[in-house]
Amino acid sequence: MSSPGKKHVTLFFVMLLLVLAGVGAGLQRTVMAFDEFDEGLRKIKLLTSVLVTIQENYVDEDKVKTEDLINGAIHGMLSTLDRYSVYMEPDEAKEFNDQTQGQFGGLGIQIDVVDGWLTVVEPLPGTPAAEAGLTSGDKIVEIEGENTKNISIYEAIKRLKGEPGSQVTITVARQGEADLFKRTITRAIIKTKAVEDKEIKMLDDHVGYIRLRDFTRDAAEELEAGIRQLQGQGMDALILDLRDNVGGLLDVAVKICDLFIPKGQVIVSHRANRKGDPNERVYTAQRDTMGDFLVAVLVNEFSASASEIVAGCIQDHARGVIVGPVGHRTFGKGSVQTLMENKELQGGALKLTTAKYYTPSGRSIMDDNGLLPDVFAQVTDEQRIEIRRAGRVSEMPTIDGDKAISGRVMEKNMEEQQATHELTVEEVFTKQDEKSEAELKKEKLYDVELFTAYQCLKGAAVMKNGAKKNYNVANSGN
Image 1 (cartoon, rainbow, N blue to C red):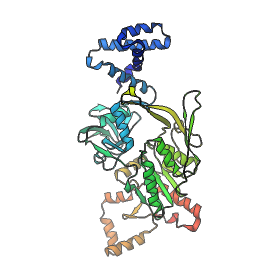
Image 2 (image 1 turned 45 degrees about the vertical axis):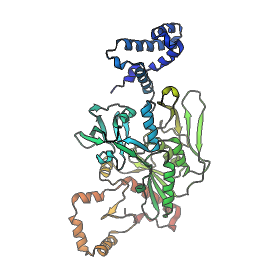
Image 3 (image 1 turned 135 degrees about the vertical axis):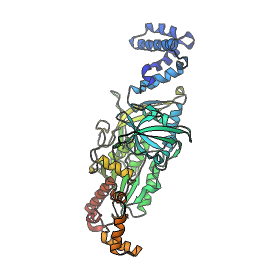
Image 4 (image 1 turned 60 degrees about the horizontal axis):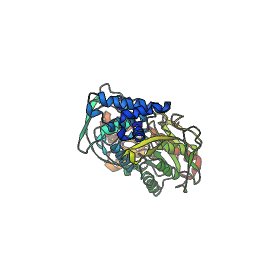
């Protein structure tokens, strides 16, 4: 859908004209005054002429207010730069600040524009979007009957959000399903944590798991608290899950890297893109690490921005292994956006791309089109969708519903069932046979990417510690 701002790409300079010529002189007199200016300023004359022509001749007088046209011009200017540089009007700027604080109103859905279509990155647990059955990879092709092709992310957010209790109807295209379907979702106040309590857990006696959902203000503190909690339970290897994490605040990403990287080491740098500008800012670790425990980082094609800073830093320092689904790099957003606010914007803000960031070794994630994982999990996109729909993300392989990762074999599992339920071996098998095909299929599903990261840590522990710890990969249940 075309943006009205694109028709008035640089009308913002009208404000400059009004200052130079005086508001009282009128727009037509301002146009004449610029006849004596150089060629660059003659372009402003053109813009002013367009503004005057629109205001004098457009059929709908309500749509030609100077303020509205200037706002359209600002949007248009930013749209010619890159997808991340945007003008946020006052209500949008407020929503953006609310999101970075971890509370906002809406559906509880992370979205991005992929190949021109509004795409669900992830519905947040317990939110209206999750309850409506939306899942990662869904394409929202219509909002209230209006097509979303080539919609900007901020326009999409504006349409999807609203007063708590109000409703919005969306049309969804889902991979593997021929027909579109509609969902009418009731908006609510969304409160999020970067680290949910249920996503801090031990996978066995040594390997811990934490999922980091975003990089909001308190994310580093929440992650540090989760790591300390698991260390108190004996953790000496960690899987950090950054899948579907589209990023957030740069300073928070730096704080998180600081938990893993030795003091004084480079975390990330960013350089301005302006020709001849030598400015470069380098961020280094400022504190001692939380320990030398083994680390595996899970990423996928929706891991972006701050997620890529953390993964790239850990990868370059050989602090851990990066694991992702076969055939995919990370998203590839390697630019720095600066939020620029001033009184002339009257509560609005410019989010402007001002630099590119680089990993410690000097790689540009944007120019390289994302990070390449060290290890690929052998799972297809179709299998990943099936795992998500079954609710098995972050679930390890199971045997009859019990964890297999502790190394227990089927015989011992059956012995435990007999002791618990006083069943004979024959009755155990009979009970198994009575399970529905759907139940059996679900039991066989597990998070392949997570299990791949787990196996990497097991193998690394064997090489690092030899026989000192009970890390026998052969007994991992695989």
